[in-house]
Length: 161
Image 1 (cartoon, rainbow, N blue to C red):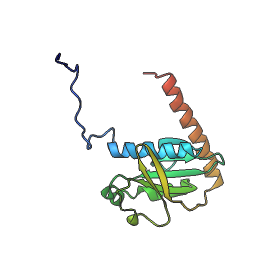
Image 2: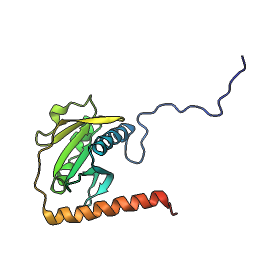
Image 3: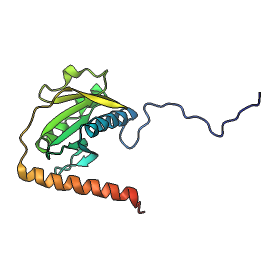
Image 4: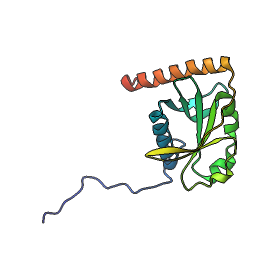
């Protein structure tokens, strides 16, 4: 048998390795949630900036113009230390937390939806209640959503330095 030599060393799996400020688990959960909402006919954007300068993990827009905001939580510590999600509520018709199947969902607020996700997909465990959303704010956000999506698509087809 001939000795086979690989031209590279396989990388070790480092679950703590971060991409930007996001862990591999957060990235995997985000992908699964985006797949779910895309399959339901929504358009999705990640890392979307709101007018209050907060950046949501995922925002999803349905064909009726309703926005769902999804906050991805990979650990209990992440959930307990990060209370910015309350500032997202005025910008959504529905608000969800997305967590892994091992996350203790009983600690999540009762008035928010829950999504269980992994890197391949997600399921809605508890539907988020409808919230009132100012019509002027919604129209402005719809424009910002469209422009952000357009800019990101343009950057993919024409990556300028």
